[in-house]
Length: 496
Ligand code: NAD
Image (cartoon, rainbow, N blue to C red; front, side, top):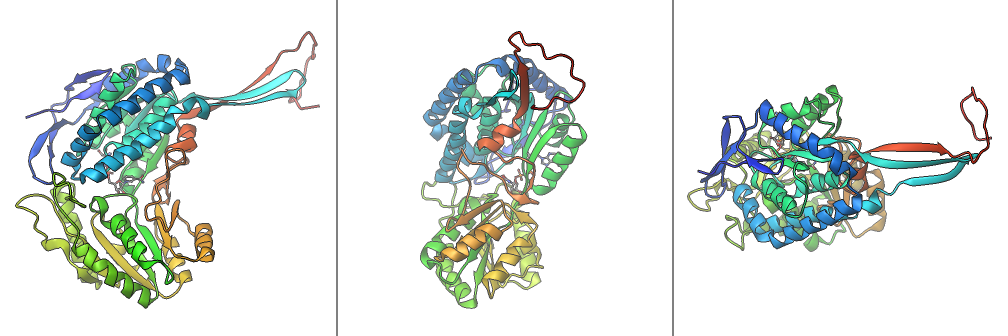
């Protein structure tokens, strides 16, 4: 059975650790191979490779780095189907979702290709007599990148392409549940001409993460995963003196106003709640309906479409939704559904009895009505195909309810009224806001990031926020006195 290699210093290696774990196809339950779980020795080897590669790469002109990134972008396009297949077989995503997620990752790589312009500094001439001042951005060093299972190519590209473009070198630890896409991408990067050691792939779980978080030669950590892990990563990285950004979980609301175009709202919510089996950090998991009539219409139009969802393995090209990632996660989502029933929510559509074949962690679309804010199914991220409907009687009540939730990644309002939409955009306490757009994931040249318990970071991902996180600002003040002597100054220089 295949044992997946690490990729360190441009070479595939099996690592020193004897520990490994099976990668299971969630549709067939077949073991696809074994992923090694790195130990401290493996971590040290990967960080060493990144550290050795850093000086030359940091000194490589940004335009030269960009040329390599352009080639990498092209190779990803050339290998789109293979990459999508890897993602679908390990994650269970439908092919169309896998392809879409690669393309959203490649969007950020395209932004990174423009790095010479993004790294342009500022220059002020004559800030004092014969004194000029300018600022430049320089790479931070070795970056540890730790990514989640649900976007095995997109998130490594969102973080990795910007970090590399800025002149850093990376140790990327992909999710141990979906490790192949990152390895595949790194091999394409090598083929595109990325020097060895600039992008290293280290497989593993908690031990590998701890090894990276505490390693003295890791300068910065960029993490994406559950909120509990994100908090831990942030605290540990800070305790070890590192720059860190950690993106966590979510509970994304859609506020449906009585004047919304209900047919397009229903289509938007259907895709956002059940696409990728609800395993997206920007999935809509709560629909807040303003008025009982709005809630009733939403349910009436949504229900037949949920029941008609085409749920199957990604090998079926027509599949709209695949299985959940693991048996354990499947059981966890089931348990949330049981809890919701016990808490008194009305389970209008029960996907638990769905039978696709003899195998796989499939779960049908579920719909809860009359969900209350003190229920566990409302407060927690379920990360499955479960949509909760909460009924409110006014716009103001809906706005306050959303603002009181601990998570604040994404949100959307569905309305035809410009006043409500504008007010919502200004007063909502959430990082990414959609107006009649269900999944407002910013494009590559803007930046991604939630608020509150969805993020533990001062800078967002990609766009200029990514550039700021992956670079240090240096400001240089220089005097070329052209023969004029200033004399001794004992006071702090001022502009006279
Ligand atoms: P996870 O937190 O279980 O794992 C993420 C990474 O952390 C993996 O590489 C894993 O190996 C590592 N890890 C897991 N437990 C650890 C521990 N105790 N100590 C150290 N490292 C640990 O997350 P997941 O289940 O892979 O991904 C799903 C979660 O990610 C969801 O909560 C989702 O909302 C979130 N997510 C957030 C964003 C965002 O941008 N905010 C994007 C995608 C996913």
